[in-house]
Amino acid sequence: MPADDTREDVPLTWLARRPAFSAAAALVAGIALHPVTPDLPRTWLALAAAAALTAILLLRLAPRSSTAALITALAALGLAVAQLEKYRFPADHVIAYTTETPRLAEIELKIDQPPRTLTGDPTPGSRPLPPRQVTSGTVTRIKTWDGWQPATGEILLQVNPPNPDLACGQRVTALGLLARPA
Image 1 (cartoon, rainbow, N blue to C red):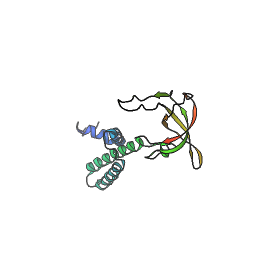
Image 2 (image 1 turned 45 degrees about the horizontal axis):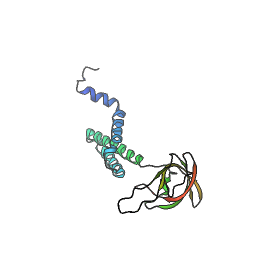
Image 3 (image 1 turned 135 degrees about the vertical axis):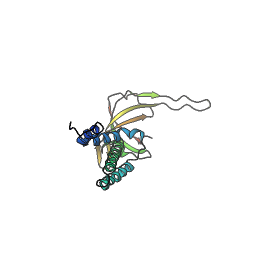
Image 4 (image 1 turned 90 degrees about the vertical axis):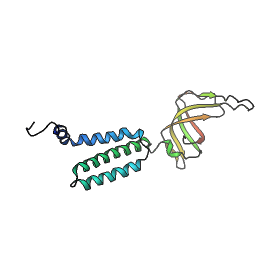
């Protein structure tokens, strides 16, 4: 260590020699913050762009402020990317074929769980609900206007009236209402 370095300058010198460490730490901090911040990825991207522009403008005038703006930009970028990834689905995911209201759909799926039959307990003074069967399945294909298309994703299957031949591991084609989960 050169003689003119003081004890206070050692951490700053170490960071100055490793600028990617600070950048990576800011990005990771943004990613780590995504569960506790509002889900506004466009806002975080806009903040990242504004902070990056601020960092460029302040580079010659105020280097420390420029560095702080750059760290803010990287943290906001990490936050936005984490939130976008949280809600991203593959292009062939079954969610792409759903809307806010239930729609008629024909789907091929493999049953993942043993089907259970549910019966509703009637409340006093009301009629009993009919039994229904529930299970989950992995979607393999969905029928569209262009024919059968490959698809992926997990769905909850409700069968009314129950089908005693339904079993875990079966590949079935189901025609029914497809709805996006609430």
